[in-house]
Length: 81
Image (cartoon, rainbow, N blue to C red):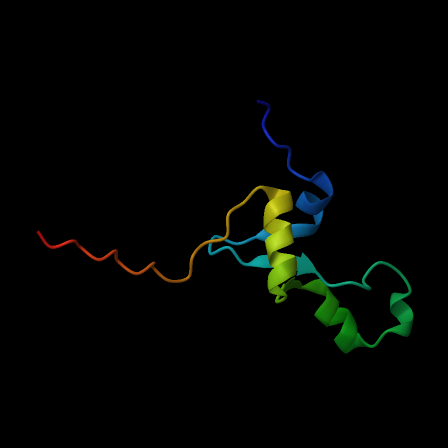
C-alpha cells in the first residue's frame, strides 16, 4: 500500500513545534501596508499560535504529524493473583 502524501499547501503555511503546537503566519501582510498602522504591521510579521483544537487536529492530519501528549496516560491497574 502506498504511503499517504503530505498536503504541500499546508506544509508551506503551517509549522509544527517540537511539543506539537501549530504556528501560522498572520494574515494581511502581503500588500496595502502603507494604510496600516505600524503596530499592526509589526504584529503581522510574527508566527502566531493556532488555538482552535479542531483546526489543529486538521493541520496534523494534513501534515502527517502526531500531536504530542501533554500528560502521561494513567498507569494500568495490576491484577492481583
